[in-house]
Image (tube, rainbow, N blue to C red; front, top):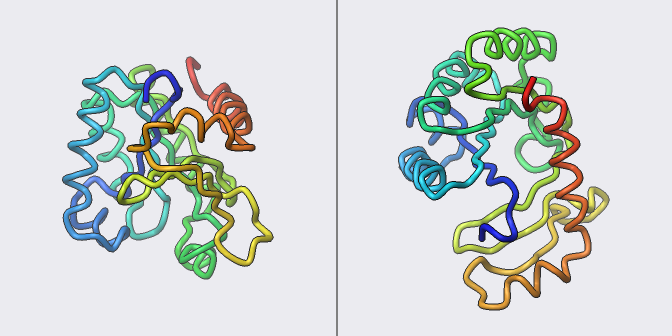
Length: 189
């Protein structure tokens, strides 16, 4: 994947397995995710960890940032809930206040920078390529007006012609520009 990937952004939603697995609703997910993060770092990838910021995990932000720092992760992001899927119905009740998240972000930067870049993504929209169980790649979210989830299928990581499929994906440049613009504000500060 290295020739085609600038950044590998991995979702990890708690410092403890219990918290992460409860949020993801997948028993054993945290252990697998952490192992994969370590493998990606060891393979030389620029790994960023995204944690959805909700009231159930806010007590673990510092511990999770500390784990990321020790694992060799480059960037840690607190992300607001997307306004789609499960998160859309719970934005107000699950989401910590924006000023609280900004305060926590600023405090963590003082502790962890320059070893770890830290920011909060205050967008409820998001822009990423999701790798789903089984290896399917989808662009997310590209079409908020869609009657489905707005995801656009790209291909599967195991496809021998994944480069061709990626080259045909009509929004690929959006992802490169979005990540560079978004991270430019926070990297190397």
